[in-house]
Amino acid sequence: MYLEFCYFILVFFFYSFIGYLMEVISVSLNEDTIVFSRGYLIGPYLPIFGFGAIFMIEYLEKYQNDIIALFILGMVICCTLEYFTSLLMEKIFSLRWWDYSDKKYNINGRVCLENGIYFGIGAILLIRYFHPWVIHVLMSWSSLMIIVIGSIIFLLLLGDFIISTHLIIQLKIDVNHFASRDSTKTVRDEMKKKLLEHSILRKRILNAYPRLRENTHMIKIQDIFEKNKKK
Image 1 (tube, rainbow, N blue to C red):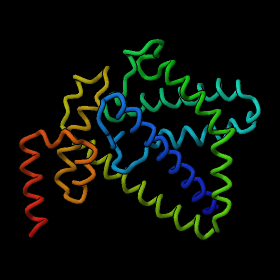
Image 2 (tube, helix red, strand yellow; image 1 turned 180 degrees about the vertical axis):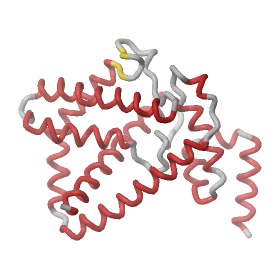
Image 3 (cartoon, helix red, strand yellow; image 1 turned 45 degrees about the vertical axis):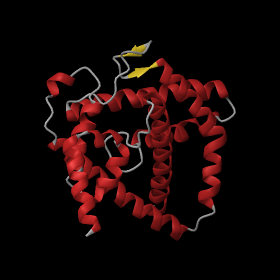
Image 4 (tube, rainbow, N blue to C red; image 1 turned 30 degrees about the horizontal axis):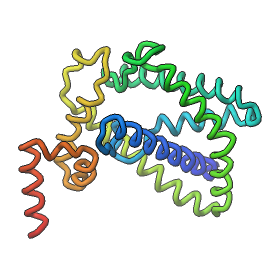
């Protein structure tokens, strides 16, 4: 039973990490600068991609030889997950984390046709080509290896979720300005201030937000840190 749980955690983490890489590449290309941080978790992973992959693997593997079914059902599963994730996070934090209102054929700005097409293509690639390889790799691991690595990753994910959620709750943001639009940038700006109070996270944040160096106050913090490091 616990072995199966650890197997699930490994698969979930792997696809969450792949989703993170896809987001980094996509956003970096759009913003003409490298952006290493996506979502509100500290680590390099996006859980929504992990859950999306798990759902598709669970319900679409039987359609492995039907490309049309994979495409359509992949769109439905992922768009449904994205829509209700957006709705749930807005209810919890009173903030809109992403908004596709500027894209054609969107539903309340939470999902859009363009992303749905990408999800459909992703479902085909995942079920027909990518996941069979992932299974092959994991099957070559011993049970002990899966349990140890899975347990470590689970603890890291749990700790990250607790810390990140605590930081988000502490942020002082006027939610009235973000009831119906994307507040991700504001949340990220506020989290920078919180996370910079912890030197252990300094390097990651500076890499994730290169423009921090343009802020005079932040530059002073950085200079103080560098002087202490040399001592």
